[in-house]
Structures are given as C-alpha cells and as structure tokens.
Length: 278
Image (tube, rainbow, N blue to C red):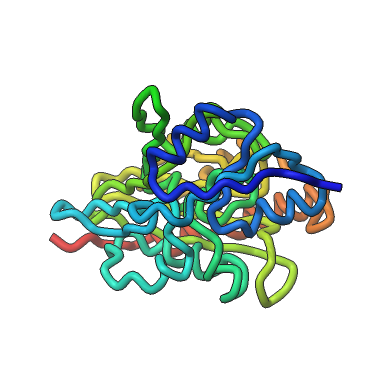
C-alpha cells in the first residue's frame, strides 16, 4: 500500500526548505491532475508530497508594459483562459489551453504542472517553445532562468534538480508575432494529443514550428523563415526529418507522420499571405 507524508507549504521559503531537506524523495503537488494518477498507478512512490497550492505568488498572471506575459506556475488552465489581457500574438497559448482536458480538469491543472510533467504530448509545450518562453526556477541556492527549449530532456524528464521548483513562466513580447496551435486527438471531447503543433511567425520573417507526441520530448524546429512558405513541401520535409514518432495506444507512427504533414500544411496555409500591421 502506498504511503507518503503530506506537507503543506504556505510560502515559497517553506517549499524550498522542504525541497532542500527531502529533494529526490519528494514530489511537488500543484493541481494534482498528473501526480495523483501517477501515485494511484504506482508510477511515482515519493516519501513526501509537498503541496505548493497555498503559495500566493504562484497564482499571479500579468502582462508587463512591454507586452511580456508572466504566469505563476500555479496558475490554473481555466485561470489562464479567463485572463482577458493575453496579448494577441500569444493566441497559440490560449488555443492550447482550451484544448487541454475537460473543464473540471482545467480548473485544477496548472501551467507549471503541465510543463513539469514533461509528457511528450503536453499541450502547452509547443506554443511556449515557438514563443520563446523562459522558466524561472528557484532553490535555496538561488534562481536561474531556463528556456523552455532546454527544459525537456526526455519522456517525463526535465533538467530540474531535486531541490528546485518552477515558480514562473515568462513569455517575451509578441506584439509583432502571429501564432497558432493545432491538435489531433482520438475523440471530439477531451483527450491527449495524437499529435499537436504550434507555429509562430515574426515580423522579421522568423518562422518556428513545434510539435508534440512525435519525439521523446516536445520538439522545436526553428531553422526556418517566412520565404520558405512559398515552398511548403520543403518545410514539411524538414519537419518530417526531425521527428521520431512511435506506435502507442493513441496512434501508429505512420499515422502520426501523416498527421504532422497535415498540421504543418495547415500552419503554412495560416501564415501564407499574412501581413503585419505597421
């Protein structure tokens, strides 16, 4: 029978003290939508579960004067969706959030938890990758900023040390960016992605495409530019050469390759002929 000690951190300092003390023997509880399933199924067997929900600053969300977005790691998906000031260039984040789970799940699931669970199919990974997001990570030894593109290391693994916790997700200004998120799943309701994809096109011509559920971690392809939209097949081939899908209960590797081609084609059509406002 699974047994662990539940610890409730009311401040960030309390959480860091507990992580310093228990580190690799502890798991962080935020929304719990992933952790509780892992505990039930015996995938994770921590000696301690540290609840960070009571920490006030983990639930803040704001847009700075320069248009950059900052979200506390404890911001729920519904809280993000209800935030009325999300910059227009970050539409892909809203689209990804709205595709994640059911309303009940979105009321519990957190932005930080979706990333830290590090599922190859996580929905917020691709839009945050194409928008160049950075994570603020804190421990008793100090803070560090980790680009999302460096955060994921493999299936359910990240570069977080045992004594660290993600406190913020920062998205740089995107006023002169167009972004989009697309997803294919088995059913019309809530489900994990068979394949998901995000694209971002900047006014300077930089084109970025990110994909989920086609490699051991969410994948970013950013050696692209707007001129390549005139030759869609070349973009598709570059993307297809970067992925390594597998067969699983949601779809075959072959089907995923077809879906990647379909989604990338949709992204290219979305961006083709776009004009930026001066």
